[in-house]
Length: 116
Image 1 (cartoon, one colour):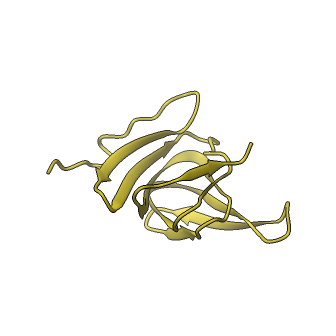
Image 2 (cartoon, one colour):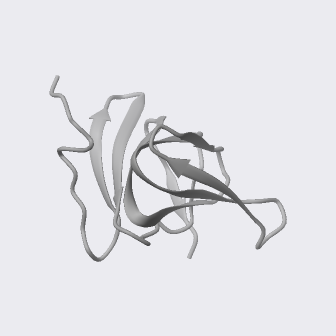
């Protein structure tokens, strides 16, 4: 098995956040999510399971859509922080002014639903 360093192997892109599949088995997916300052992943939900985010560098926030449409719960993320996007809840990952690197962990296979 190969080792991946989410910081030294960072792959930022200018036009949108980038994702690196760090570990993928028949039951688990661990990704590196790279966001430049102000970038956001966009509203999405994992239909079949929870997704945990571990901030490994920088800062930003995990935004969860609450039961009332249009309402949001904003969870601050900084290096070392862990936050959960519960199953079937739309969420958006937003980088702060210095950008952010997160590790995203979820059950595999992952069925992502994007909000159009």
